[in-house]
Length: 66
Image (tube, rainbow, N blue to C red; front, side, top):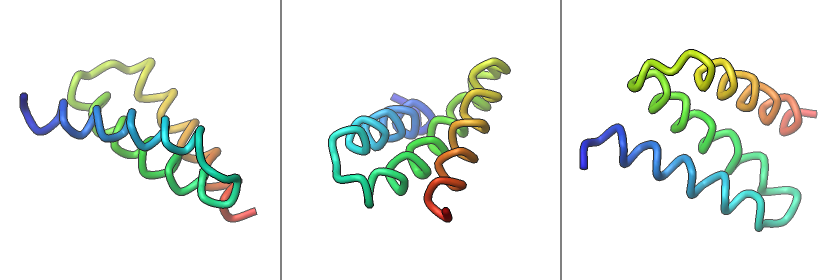
């Protein structure tokens, strides 16, 4: 398994953990999971997924700062 697939799996795990955690910590899991999945989506060159991950990550950052 190459490093980008490992990064993708970590992103998926972090977002999944964020769904199961308390509200105050979920945004951090979403942010880092989104960044990891963004790296993976850039690697596989899936432009729809890239846009989705950018929107998701920016939304999580906004919610965390707010």
